[in-house]
Length: 213
Image (cartoon, rainbow, N blue to C red; front, side, top):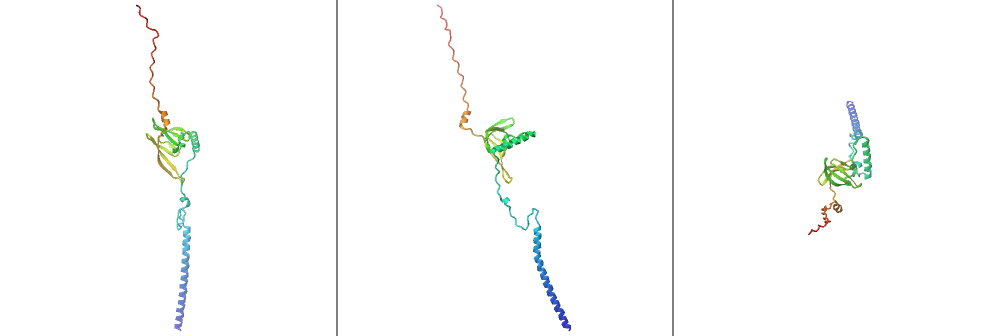
């Protein structure tokens, strides 16, 4: 009797142990299944400061891949209208008015002459679209550049190129004196002065009187 009771207790303990092991296995499997979901939910809620998911591969936006082009300046008439508006605003504010050359592009001017003034070197440029001449000094601005220096036979400009993405590229541009056309050069030559012709002597009106004998 004693051995049969012991066997029953041992058998019951074994069955209980099997059930406990099976329960632990099922619990571990359910926990393992739930952990990735929890991690995924935490990752979805966690964001980097710029709002991008840290677990998502970075992709360059289409706007960033779009190539930027050079900004085309307005027409000469639009630039003249802008200059007039700026001049009127400056006059109303009792400020110095901008010079007309601020409405001109570097490609629209030709260097007519270079001279020395009490203020230093000055250059005379002609605006080809409107056929007007202006005197400019180093430091003066144009629509797409600035006069940096005046040399003996050329002007040194800082040219500025504007791009659609906001970039501004600066480069050096040189402009030499405009060469005169052959006809203009001939017209500019002054004829040699003609020496004055000596006046002819007038004949004596009265003949000398005959001598008396």
